[in-house]
Length: 264
Image (cartoon, rainbow, N blue to C red; front, top):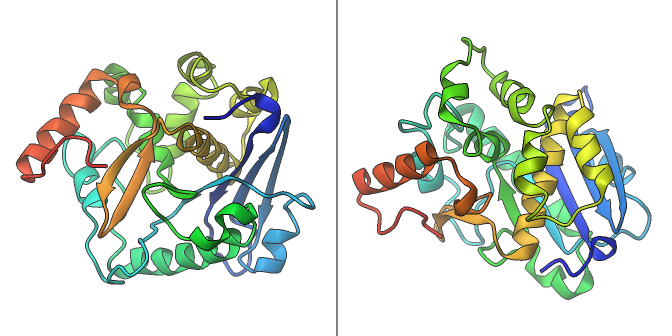
């Protein structure tokens, strides 16, 4: 558990891999201080945005992460769950075993190795994604979607590729609704919630949701959907999910003949 606000050392990373623009979003929570920044793909660019001496206990990365020893071409069950109805038009992930997705998979693996260097010495030997952490995979679209009422989701306009996250963010984060749902569960500084409400930049918004994911993972209350061969998505606690999302994942996992609705 996070013992107190002043003790939390968490890192959220939105992986970007543009060679020309600073598309990596970084959110650092160091006790009661939050630091947001954008960086490029090189470690020199990324580490320059990390406060000196910062050692996170949990890192949440928005990008497909495979467990150690996994087949690089594996089709991930956690992705397969969320490409099916009712998630397919609400928070569908890209498939990471081919095409553009495989490029993101490689970029995410590199980011995992890079940011893993920052881990507290007690966790340095576990600088890879694992069900018990300290590096976890965030899925910001689904994080927001499963907390959003179905009526709001049904009112969504037709959105271009890559625009759904910001639409979801506008519905639930900038309105203060996300804070009202999560603040009792996450004892975070007020400045974190202020930045969540007011942030406009896409990459920094995603990094903030990654930071919230890291906070739930640090508590041990995140809902991990996936399995050991392909990895997991870490999401808000299942008790907070909207009814449509709970019913949906139960239906999907039944159709896929999986053992339980929450697969962790």
